[in-house]
Length: 263
Image 1 (spheres, rainbow, N blue to C red):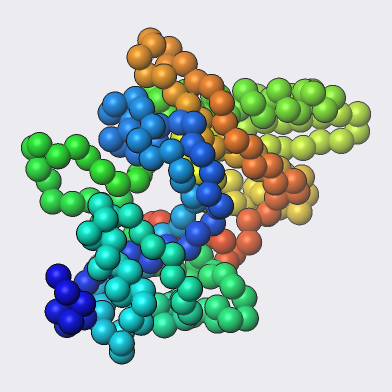
Image 2: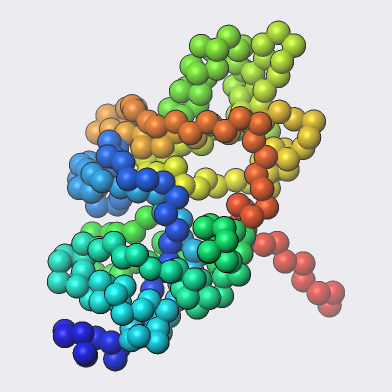
């Protein structure tokens, strides 16, 4: 539609923060890529969901402004290919109810955002449409293969540096000793970008304990060949955080335990 018509409409807007630069992917990650065991979207960047905004105005008084609003309109005529726009994101943060000052910090505290799930992103179900949207790996065999591959890479890394490594699994993944030194390592793996990982409350408490020396070893972009019985894995990009203790602003709770009132 023409812009004069477009700007009278309202849309739902998914707000993300870019957390990793562009890179060329080696592993199928999105559901339609996994279904075809092929990379359809080779150039990727890491994004973290911040908020879902509904009923967003598209005119000059809306949080997007004219340039970004029109860029979204134009992308709809170009198979959804986006356009980079230089804009102040503060009106979007304000519209989402996110307490942040972008001009001062150039970042957003994750624990002050609501986020959204893959269920919010999925289009209406259609028997002829392949599933789309990011999300959790539903195949437990594949999930285990990814975890084991990441752990194998972590073990090899520490052994090359002269550590003796013991695989534990719980309460943490790897116990490493070298002379009088000790390190405890949490390992995470994914086929996508290294933007965020799931942590249990026990993992957070353990990493924050000042008596523990904890590293976080993340392997992203892991290739998984599901055509083999054992699910062959390969590749991966490493993000290694030494002396790791997750900060409160980088943690967003996904669930709460609610204590019911007394009868």
